[in-house]
Image (cartoon, rainbow, N blue to C red; front, side):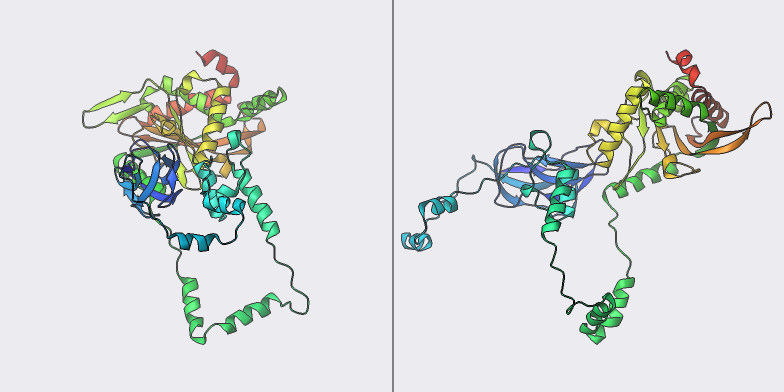
Length: 429
C-alpha cells in the first residue's frame, strides 16, 4: 500500500483544502496521473500519483481542510497481495451472454480504457462549474491539452442542443401567472418559512486563501507601525513617450516603467529594500531587487514576484508582468514565482482608486500603490495653466526601519524618473 499525503507545495504552506478528486475508489491510475486538487492560500495545485496502482481508499472527504503530512488516499500496487479471483457459475455467465454477437460480447467484456486528461486546475474548475464531464471534451491545446476555450465551446454547443421546445400559445403563461401558480402549489404553512429562508444570510467559508490573507494582513498590521505618505506625479511626458513607442509597434504598460523606476529608487534608498530582524536587532539590506506585484483574482489577493527586476529591461519587465498576472488569475503560479519578494507595488489605478493606506507585505519594509491618473489643470512654473495627466500614489513604510523624510526623498526620486523619461539613459547603469 502507498499513502498519498499532502506535502508542502508552497513557501510557508501549512494546510490546504481538498476541492476535487479526479479518481474514485477502485480506479486504476498511472504514475504522474492527477489524483486530487488542493487549494492552498496561494494557488490551486494537483497532486499526482507517485506509483501505478489502484485506488484502495479515499481517506479525506471533498471540502475538508487538511494539514501538511495528512494522508489523502491509499493506493494498492502490484507488489501488494493480490485478491482472490471471484468466479461466477458457468450457467449464470451463459445466461448473461444469451444470443449476443461476438463483437458485442468483446466490447462488453473488455474494460473501457480511462483517458489521461491534460488540463490545468483552473480549466478543470471551470468545467466543474458548468457540470461538464471533462473526459468528453476534445482538447485543442498543445499535445491535446484541454483549454478554457474548449470548455466554453463545449458548453455552448451543449446548451444549444438541449434548448427545450417553445410552448404553444394555447399553453403559454405569463411570468406573473406562473409565479402565482407556483406559490399556490406550495403548502400554505410554507409561505412565511419561504420568506424567512430568503432573508437568511449567505454563508461563505472563511478558509483557504481568504483565511491566509486575513492572517498575513493581521500579522503585518499588528507588527509593523505603518505610516502612509501621499504624493502626486505628472505622467504627461511618460504617456507621450508610450504613444511614440506604440507608433513603432512597441507596446509597454505604464506599470512596467513604474517597476523599473522603483528598482532605481531602491538602489538610491536601500533602506526600503530591507527586512528587520528584531530578535537579532539587525536590518538586512537585500542585494536582490525582487518586486512583488499585487494581483486581484477571483480567489483573493495574490502577489507574484518579478525576480531581479533591476537586471531586466522595461520591455522584459512588461513581458514578465503580463505573464505573471495571467498565471495568477488562472491559478497557475508556481511556488518559486511567489517567493523572496523585497518590495511590493499595487497598481490599482485602472480600477478607479483615488487613494488608500495600503498594508505592507510582511516582512518587507515598504509598499507603494499607484492610483487613478486624471487630466486636471495645473499651474506651471511660469504661471501658465496647462492640462496635465496627474497620478496619485500612496506609500506605506515601516516606521521602525525608515523615517518620513527618507520616504519623501524616495518618492521624490521615483517621481523625477517617471516625470522625465529622457533621464532614463543617464540613470540606467
